[in-house]
Amino acid sequence: MQRREFFRNAAIGAVGLGSFPVSARCAPLAGGKMGENVYDVAVIGGGTAGTAAAIQAARLGARTLVIESGSQLGGTMTTGGVNFPGLFYAWGKQIISGIGWELVCKTVETHGDSFPDFTAKNLPHWKYQVKLNEYLYACLAEEAALEAGVNLCYYCFPMEISRESAGGANWMISVAARDEVFGVRAKQIIDCTGNASAVHLAGFKRIREDEIQPGTLIFGISNYSLEAVDKAALKKAYAAAIKSGELESSDLWVGIIGVLKEGGFNSQHTLNANSATSELQTRTNISARKSFLRIYRFLKRQKGLENIKIDYVKTEAGVRETYRIEGETVITAEDYASARAYPDSVCYSFYPIDLHVHNTVKPKMLESGKVPCVCLSAMVPKGSRDILAAGRCVSSDRLANSALRVQASCMAMGQAAAVAAALAATEGKSPADLDIGEIRKVLKKHNAIVPNV
Image (cartoon, rainbow, N blue to C red; front, side, top):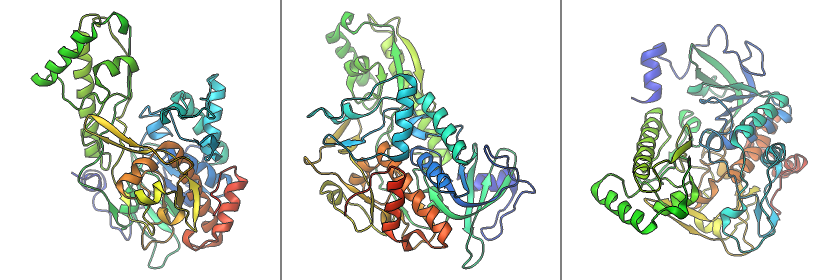
């Protein structure tokens, strides 16, 4: 059963798109006042892009709300445990800064960690990612959001999104909470769900291929010595386990020796990982945990690994790909690889084409010196007004999206979308109608790096 149908049938009865019920009181919002339900900017999804978007919008004086279905900010980086954002540097030069970089730096410095050497040449791309303590990042991101004046609404998600009236200035958002349904009005919406869910609810098109990339459940294992393990015997047992069905060939994309070298970490694959609906994300997490148990039980009975311990298993599987918006501009793999400059470029993105398949990954590196751009029109759903999408669901083809989806790029997109949304709310315009020069000027003022076009 789809999420919207479930809540209509089980919780509140029918909710019409044109006139949703507004609770007598709004849910208490962290950092806000009871009863506030009119906002300049509503950010749907408090993940990698949504965190940066919310902080930026609020710092510009916009009354800002985050509607987040989980328990904290950060999304894949925190709840999913993919705590190694990148890439902020390209070819030895910083190309993404701003709010995302500010939070990354604060987390690294507060925890006493260190940065990679961004000036080092010819290293694998993942060597330039920044390892973070994700627990601290979640706390610091929340602190920064509250200090900026963001209203945080956890454990909630939108059920219906429609215009207040024909040609009305405000969006009407029906929000499901644990104990009630309440209404929110917003001048501008930024969809940071990663699935283009808000764009879909608002009636605009989203796209997805039949095949999607595998997801990964991040986990940690320890209390063993790789040097003491008979690697030839382990490889033989691994092959036999796949043949017998004890393990699936997709369980470990790094192989059996790789998972021990990595201590678990980013080594697992869950096929058909999808977070587009509650039902699909439930299936994805169940499949991922079944895979983890297969891996752990197999390792536990191997000679030299009998005392292996589990350090952690993340709450959710990280999902790499679901829906993308159909935008006014579609960023293609050719556009991305050639570093096409757009008249409305607002930020950079940098990562190899990085398509995960079954039990491997096939990166395709960019040519030396190339730094791709992201344009505002790729964040505007085709035919829309007053709604943007930032992060993984940016308008792009599948190969371009496999690079655009990474965290530093999503942070940059979130900040750029927030500047456009906040300015649009102030000026009574749609983001696409704004002066792109003014957007870039404000981004620079808030320490973002803007493409020279």
